Image 1 (cartoon, rainbow, N blue to C red):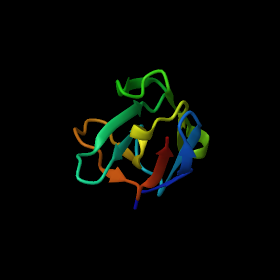
Image 2 (image 1 turned 90 degrees about the horizontal axis):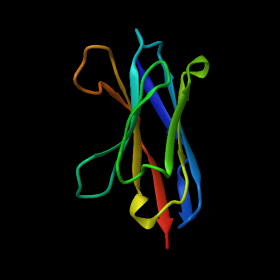
Image 3 (image 1 turned 45 degrees about the horizontal axis):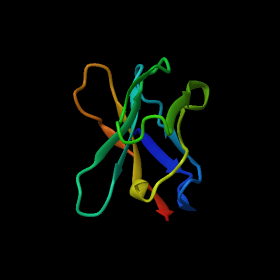
Image 4 (image 1 turned 135 degrees about the horizontal axis):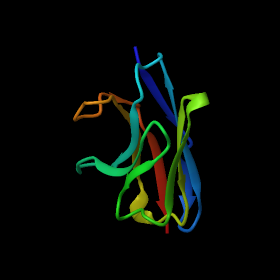
Length: 119
């Protein structure tokens, strides 16, 4: 069973930085794509950034471009989201997800980690 565990969330002030981590266990098959999403209460899940197995950043959300960086370490089965210049509107639960080759949707999701940015 593939499992994803996020960590690194917390409460910070505007302008601060945080680094989120996502570790994948359960030996998922193939070369999967990973992504970060975020969600606030009452709203749909919002795409943040996506990275391929090889480490190529294939997409990043307009609202975080230039402030957030996605990267991964395959040897550790880990993916990261470096968040700089945080804003109150970045407050959300952040989720990591895995999509297998040929699939349209992300099949596995973590439990989420809360990020709260105060002004």
